[in-house]
Length: 189
Picture (cartoon, rainbow, N blue to C red):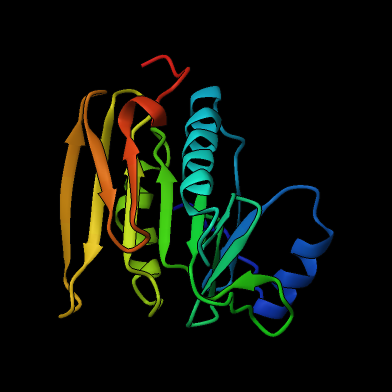
């Protein structure tokens, strides 16, 4: 029988102290830090394209668009995550140290082979704990395909899959429209 490695569990405060000094980003889930891998050319291009399109459409509104440098804290205080794109439309609320945003309205994740399952399941469940969170966009890297989730008044989620460069996705909570041809601009799919 092989020995199970012992994990060194950290408090949220210990994680934040380490993260503030770190040269790379790590997410934190229930006491465990998870180093984040660098993104591919496609991943980075898609995230920048989405950020840029949202920024342009939201420029004259109260909404702000953030890239993957901004952490989101899940209310349990046991989870700190780095979405690829976050949109906040109310006055941004931060945790007590200003390390992480508490009030995302829209979260975008660009899927990779290694993170797709996590982004679709666990990460989505974590984000659902955030009261302000209303829309979730999952974007494939290898084909023109987007999964769009919208929270309903009863707390359930409706998912729509959009495929094809000639299609678009309506982001109702931020009143924006993203054309898939713009999401995948200069991306080899």
